[in-house]
Length: 72
Image 1 (cartoon, rainbow, N blue to C red):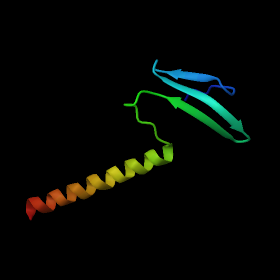
Image 2: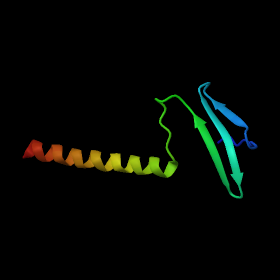
Image 3: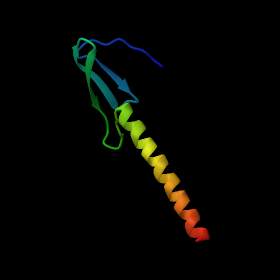
């Protein structure tokens, strides 16, 4: 992991097309802004994990249904 220090209104550039800017710092909370192409999905980590778990469950249910239909 790369750890960088930034102050308010300073930014980082990732891969020439994603910009992350520090918008506000209040105590332990940092507000960031992200500019990226529309085709780049951006999720909070906890939401991303929920999506991945839901996808795994859907795949498992679909696989079970396919097996049931095969031997049906």
